Image (tube, rainbow, N blue to C red; front, side, top):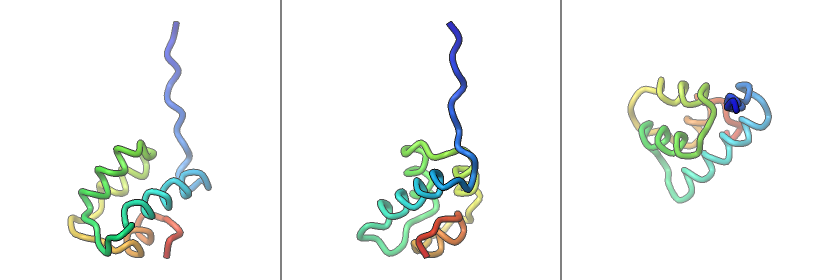
Length: 78
């Protein structure tokens, strides 16, 4: 029996953008700013696509508003 490789979503697909928007909505509920490391940890826990994890990891350390995070990561919550 062979293992099938994991299915990955193409960056920028509607599904991956929706998942990113859902993650950001959840992260920022009741929060004004979130650190890059917290965004990354939550994205890993949510099993976000590798391409998105790479973009989050490349963010400079610091805190981001939801608008800043969405702009940088390609979400539509601006």
